[in-house]
Image 1 (cartoon, protein in one colour):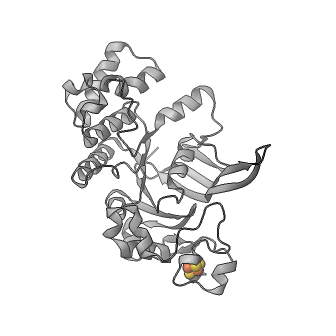
Image 2 (cartoon, protein in one colour):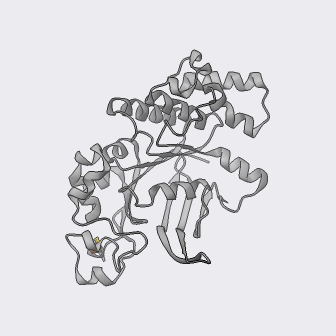
Image 3 (cartoon, helix red, strand yellow):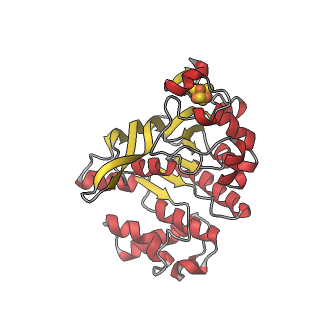
Length: 323
Ligand code: SF4
C-alpha cells in the first residue's frame, strides 16, 4: 500500500447505547452517540476529529478500533471488516491498530514496571524470546525519548509527559500502521503538549503511521492534521483539508469554533460562551438539522428537514445554506 491509499474506511457508522428501564429492564430509549459517519483515513495521513465534549468522537474512536461494535454500518481496515474478523486475522488487525489514551495517569497499570507495560503487546502477540522483547523495549524507549534506566521504574515515578511517552511506546512497539490518538495531550501542561505533539509528528514522518487524532483543541488539530472532520451530536458536519477549513470554514458550527480560538484551546467549557444554548441531549436529538437550536443562521426549513452532506469545492458540509 502506498501513501495516500485508503487504509481505514468508515461507512455510515451508527452507534446507539440502549437505555433500559422498568422491572424487566426493557429498552426504553437510547443514547444516539454516533449517527451515520462516513469518511476514509489514508495511509500515512493524520485525520483530525474535533468537536465538543460528548459529541461522540471518543465513541467513534472505540468503534474504529473494534473495541465497540457499531449498531449499524461498517469499519474496514486495509479492506477487512474490523468487526467481522475472527481468530488470527482479528489478532493481526488489533496489532496493526493501536491507541494512545487521553489520560496517561489512568491508562498505565501502576503495579507494572515500564518494561512490563511497554513489552506487554509483544508478549501477547508471541513469537519472541525474553531477551528479544527486552531489546525491543529498550529500543522503543529510546525512540520516544526515555532513558534505559526508566525501564525498571513504575508509572507513579514519572511526570505526565513522560507517562504519555510510555503510552506511545506501548502502542508503537507492535509496529502498528494506524493509531487512534484520543485527546493525547489534553491532560498535559501546555509546555509539555508541544513536546508530545512533535514526538508524534516525528514518529509519523519516520515510520509512516496514519493517525486518527481526536481532540477538542483546534490549534492542536490544525498543527497535526492533513484533513479535519468537525463532529456535532454524532455527525460529521464538515470535512475538509486542514488549510481550507481554517481559511474558509463553511458550516456555522465550524465558524463558531474558529471564532472561539484561542479560548477553545484553554478548555472545553468555553464552547458554551461561543454558542448560544446548551448542547442538546443525544437521547432526544433535535428535529431537522441537529444544530438548529444553537445556529444563528437557522431558518424554518432547518427546524424540520435534516440536511444531507453536500460537496462544496473539495470540502463536504452538512448544511442547508449550501443546498
Ligand atoms: Fe444552521 Fe440550518 Fe445550516 Fe443547520 S442547516 S447549520 S441550522 S443554517
